[in-house]
View 1: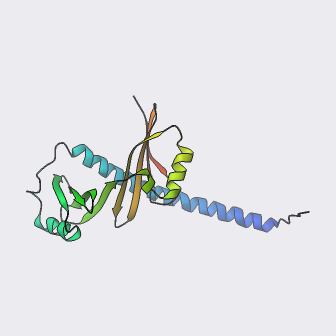
View 2: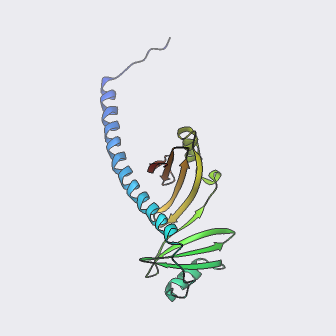
View 3: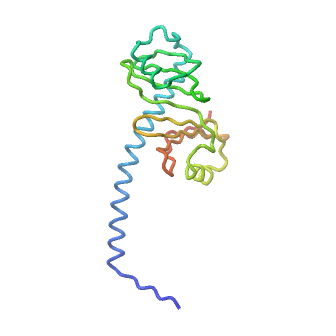
Length: 181
């Protein structure tokens, strides 16, 4: 026979720890969400402006080109785009299609690539399958920069589009949810 001994103080302590960790998680989630929203806005801006951008590298500062060539020796299919406030470069490197982002003064903002679902961290795959049944995946990409690696996933069903983001942990955060028209 199993007898459980419950200490009333352990319950108080665990409740206190739980409340503190919830407050810390709220603050962290707010900061993570801000970064994810900024990154998604940045990527959306890039995709939206692609039709009007161009240049092919003619107007790119030599410092930026040198920084790129130093980091990605042997890159091919390089195409540059100039936007207000940043520069985008599409290129192939090591068999991957990548997109790099630079400030106008040559500082690398990050590099992105499309990935397969199986390339996501295992816990993100499991959470997506568990919590988003009935949705299909329309976009998955990875964004890497000095802050680490982030993952973005777009899901759709007949009625909704959901954009999720994660800093590579085991949880997805809803970045945007919208009804289809």
